[in-house]
Image (cartoon, rainbow, N blue to C red):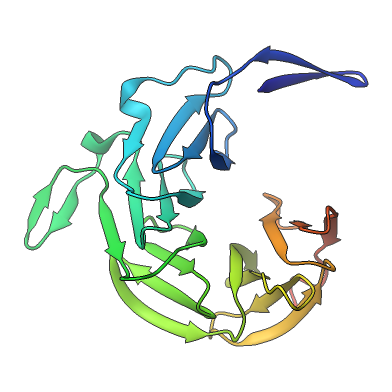
Length: 238
């Protein structure tokens, strides 16, 4: 359902008939949002609720678990329980995918497959549409570039959420811990893939993790039904 907030009440102004939805992600500009249901992703225009055929993305053969928009909202990356990570363009004719030594128009532009694997989280490196951080339930984080596995580093816990934030001129990766036998927390990983801190956020596994556009706040939710809001301080310190 799509709702408007009027003073102290919510009023529905539109509804979308979709079942089995596991993920909804708004674009950075807020004009669109992507809805995952089973193996399909539909992109809707927020103000009208419109979903045209060219904004339906079908390639996953199992549940789509995670979506991450590009910085400029020209497309997004998706990860699924079928072991695939796809990079999509909203307007595939505007970009060329390099296939071998030839340029080819296609959508998805890039894909990566991991056999017997379920992806739970993906996020793009800032300023890049080809480099992706991805994780499943194998206690590792993968770095994928143009559909190829570039690096795998072990974190020792199952990760359900990945978010990149700017720390001065260096990227910082936040990884949400999802273990049944331990509290939910956010790991802070630096550009050298070293875990530099861990912040306990919940008494149960962490479910969602987001960073505000200005990198001043971190938001988290967990299976303990708690929403956590954390202020980021000392961003200019190493």
